[in-house]
Image (cartoon, rainbow, N blue to C red; front, side, top):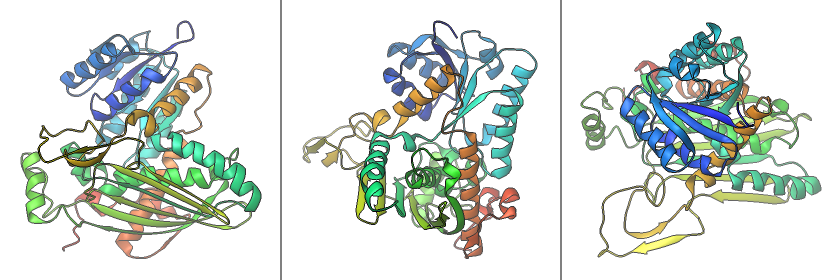
Length: 416
């Protein structure tokens, strides 16, 4: 660490890494020095983006994680590689540090921390074994509308009439970018694992009293449902097959494209709190929709990212190529369209990375860390267990610790 600045390297060179890199324009005291990826071309492209927008210092593609750790300019790593590479990534990080190949201050990891509880525990253990600070990259708890909304609701509403007791969170879009996301065995599940991790943690954050630890509210039960509503239909299953050179077979090995859960919590005074979540890969609208609702005795709060301050309209005579220049997971190029003018800011990536960088510079564990990632994984596994057994799961439940969802084993098929 030089001149009170932190040098970072990215593991993974794809979509999410580029979101993080864009967000760093508004983060102080951080420089990108490198990217490593299974596909070196993607690492080179992401490094070039960092250099071109002014957040990289001669950022380059590295051949391995160990080589990147050995660079004395790099103080911390941002792990944005695919879910199926999570354990081997952290094993290489721990091995490189324990054998003296290099030194780091900390490491952050994109959601989910692991595809199951065992994997999430292993990531936490490997990180602790080499004394690294750890930050869990859950961007939605850093979204400005969420953090400001929580501040107002708790300062004005809860202080006057009592704490909030119901949170609803949803994330919906038309499906992931990369073929591996659709594969239960590689990703760890379907939309529940991919996106309910956001909704569960965002709602838990909103219901936690400011200044108190996240475990000040404790889950006591969860009831969930999963289904494949769109992508197992033959015409849509064919699209997935074609996009993966025949590897993804949703007729025989689907993953859920719809999931919902209801989680019951108790606060420190044993007051009942409720979290409702909905996630979908079969939502067809303008693009990615993130929504949050929070309710208390005499107040409420609403957030919907498809209600931005900028909208455009294009008539039928306006034509152009498909893209995502207006909103992530954009589904149309004509008609009335919302524009999220700064997605990295609106979705929380900027504030998230600012917090991680500031924490590492201070030698402090980030507020959102791998303990939170592990707890989210436990809740997701409990949700899968509930959906498979078609019953409410009481919490805590020791069976969750070794549970592997049927969808992650390629054994789930709602059509039998």
